[in-house]
Image (tube, rainbow, N blue to C red; front, side):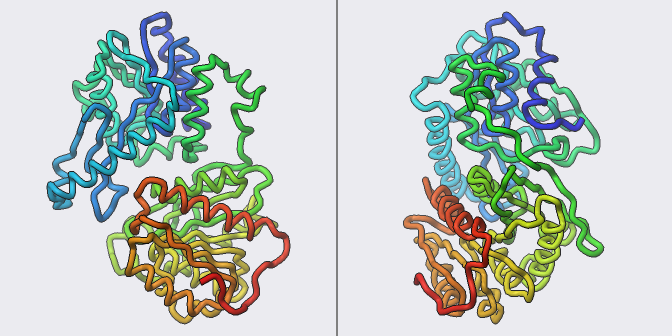
Amino acid sequence: MPFANRAEAGRRLAERLTYLRGQDLVVLGLPRGGVPVAMQVAEALGAPLDVIMVRKLGIPFQPELAMGAIGEDGVRVFNEGVVAMAGVRLEELALIEKRERTELERRAHRFRGDRPRIPLEGHTAVIVDDGIATGSTARAACQVARAHGARHIILAIPVAPPGWEKRIGRDADEFVALETPEPFFAVGQFYRNFSQTTDEEVSACLERAAAGLTEATAMEVGAIDDPPGRDEEVGISVGPVHLSGHLMVPDRAAGIVVFVHGSGSSRHSPRNRFVAAVLNGAGLGTLLFDLLTADEELDRANVFDIRLLAARLSEVTRWVVSQPEGQGRRIGYFGASTGAAAALWAAAEPGAEISAVVSRGGRPDLAGPHLGAVTAPTLLIVGGHDDVVIDLNRQAQSRLRCDNRLVIVPGATHLFEEKGALEAVAKLARDWFVDNLADPLPRCVPQRSSGR
């Protein structure tokens, strides 16, 4: 402990599971992060590899907080306490479940492609994840495997909190965990490299397993990418507070994009992590960090204190450029909701030298008089059904004097949860940053607004 990455965790987990070699089993990885771990286990045990599909159900006003999970074949697991605390109505619950089931089916097809699901009836199912925190997703996965006819279910993970088996109960027949450390705050704290696993990586793992490629052979044919230059959890001191973040800088990165999340979110936001993975794939570095400490987040006034958030961002940016990976690289900001206002405010500060800004469903209007001082090329992305925010972005755009563009994603709402909406955001952001961070010379000086 800690594990270097998911591949190492998988190899160590496989060593613990050698007693299963030769048995009639199927290894099932929980997408996305559990699949690279499961791949190592399946290869070591000589077993077929598949994914087992589940989706967390987030409460409406804070989607990152799970109130339960769903799986294939109509499986549902709810945390009744969270549902009651959040006051979620039945009709809201039904809408959330319907949306997540649509996404579950989409991902199942994307991961497996034209390959059929590996039958589980009469087999031992070895369900693998990169770690367990609450256990709701793992429970749903076990129930899905049971519904598919698995005769014996083994839940195997590298790391979990003490007493984790009680959270799963009778949904699994056997439990294997390499480490149960205390204190336990999040799975990522026990990995030096805990970058988000992308859809493409999951598909590649399954294709590699289906083709029977070993790890060495996969590297030879290019099925496994070279390791990144730096990919790790970081701590950033800003005055008296200590902020947590995740820095990912590929080798030969053109620039680094600092993510500025909005209200009710954090560095663990699945939407921002998805966009970050797309940027990483395009050769850009990313930093996702928490603007506020856990105690500060309890005061909702801090979430809308744009002056405070912008000051924090400026300090964090200075930290980035002081790192070996940040020296000589151009910096961009990706802001969401109130984070977009903080990004623009910080970009307008004298000497900021920010090369590009992208706002996703943002509130740039909250940057107020600072908008006119922004020199970084700015892309504003808004959902087509987010009427109020569209108007606020148009008002903010009229005050920008740098190169800028407003793009409306058709059919998308504020969180871009519709099919293909977040992918569209990621591609727009990728192209904007690639265009503006790769150029060694400043591309933007104050000028008349364009692209409306």
